[in-house]
Length: 153
Image (cartoon, rainbow, N blue to C red; front, side, top):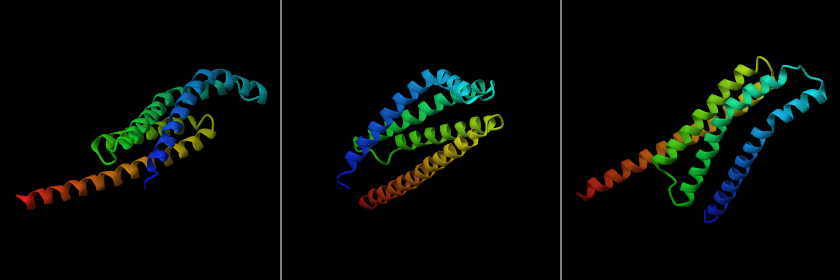
């Protein structure tokens, strides 16, 4: 358990890396999609479908990365179980499921979006489970603290 700060810092660096990657992809997406369609000879409507799906997902992806960054910063400062972290996990969960809804709708036009939807659903479920476990642990900790205080009185 002594090396957890190194793991958290590494995770924080990965969040920064993916944030930069998100910005780069959002800027380059039209060029990448246009090149892909021309190179592979795909349907001419594909770029519009991909961009109309990816750009609405960007804010939700940003919320997830910002929430993870704040959560990791809280853990580095010693706050592991707390209402702030539960709210951050809740925001990440809701964002994942918003991405699921967007990509499921787009999957009718371009089937690989179903894979993206499944991946986002798995991430959302993971965030939900971790949030629920943290919530239970926090509730038990508060009950224990309340019992200790009432015993002292």
